[in-house]
Length: 404
Ligand SMILES: NC(=O)c1ccc[n+]([C@@H]2O[C@H](COP(=O)([O-])OP(=O)(O)OC[C@H]3O[C@@H](n4cnc5c(N)ncnc54)[C@H](OP(=O)(O)O)[C@@H]3O)[C@@H](O)[C@H]2O)c1
Image 1 (cartoon, rainbow, N blue to C red):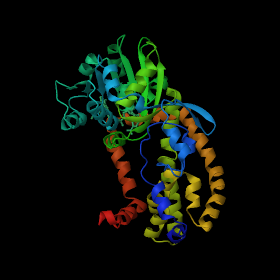
Image 2 (cartoon, protein in one colour):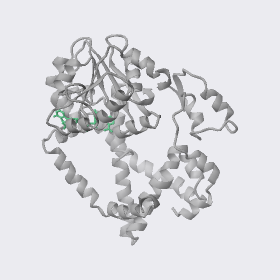
Image 3 (cartoon, helix red, strand yellow):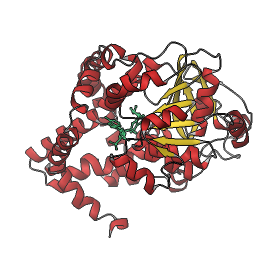
Image 4 (tube, rainbow, N blue to C red):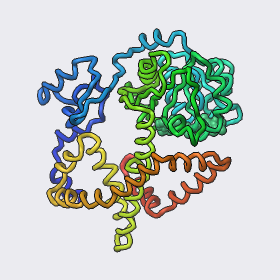
């Protein structure tokens, strides 16, 4: 789409207002009514503003469906400290989530310790982040033995591999925490059969652990899913929400372990990563085969999408993005969206089946349990990095003002 046509419909003051980075709102209320702005002005949206100031709303109407959402404002730091005053949070694994959640817990003043294997890369990374061996950094078994709440943030494949050693240490009174429903939901494949006498809960941040940390440091919070697999104490949900806030969530959307894992595996294979990469490649290849230059093909496929249009969808929704484009662009996009949907929907159904029946889980376990999985993964990344589209992208990005 020509940027000229895009610019023609551009409305600078409104656009600047509408695409400001979203701020963490104090309260979840009527999110559908807020969909057109992340910072409603009192002049433009008095009704919205007054509803925002109401507190404690838990049941939210999402497009006609009532859902439960928790907010961090109900769990100020003092309340968290009081709630977890007798707990030791043993966070096992220090990958992307371990790093983000662990540092946020520490900054929130929680009694958190890290458990990782001593010869692994994570041990060194944890030390670099200020975790001290023997004080708040231990090997996995020792951390679990000290913990009242065991936060299993090992890789999903490692959760399965280490389960025979971990399970006997999860004695009555402890709580088991996950950030993905993968291990318990697919227990026939993972063999993670949780003990029946402990609470089992989930907080799954909807983003990378790096974002969990960055948003926390900015004073904002990431959206997370929250769920209970097993409630022995009657306090499992409350504990999950409190932990979710303590690890840096802003809003916590109630779900189940099953729904979390199905939607997560499906989404990352679809629109979040796999599907979008496939679309990029298909569009780019056709442009190149039809005689367009690499820069033109890249700009029209990835650069304009990620730098201009997708942020607008993120800020204000699809209709707003359409409205900000030329009538020509809009007409064509509306016409073709139906054909793309009809063509892709069977693929998405295949994908959902493959998630639900465990094939995706099995593949992940098979691949990620191999001792040389990092080398194999790096080989695949090298192939992607060396595709023309991404080499062209590197050159295009180097021309961005901030990279000069
Ligand atoms: N990454 C995300 O964006 C994200 C988002 C939401 C939820 N989650 C979920 O959060 C959990 C953790 O994911 P992650 O991405 O943070 O971690 P990850 O990078 O997949 O896992 C890394 C951790 O697992 C450890 N590990 C791997 N194999 C091990 C083994 N055989 N024995 C002991 N430790 C082993 C690593 O230690 P070494 O350094 O010693 O190898 C490292 O500390 C998963 O359930 C994941 O699905 C992740």
